[in-house]
Amino acid sequence: MNEVAATAGYFVSRLDGKKILLEQLEENLEKLF
View (cartoon, rainbow, N blue to C red):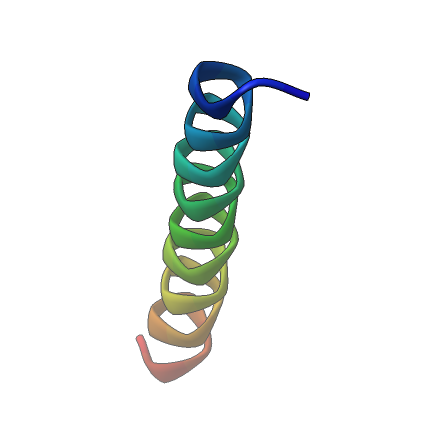
């Protein structure tokens, strides 16, 4: 695996993690309101 692919995979996994966090935040907000 070359460095470019490894870096791209790292950023994609970071974005997926942020997406999951945002979805959890939205669910928590819906429970509050």
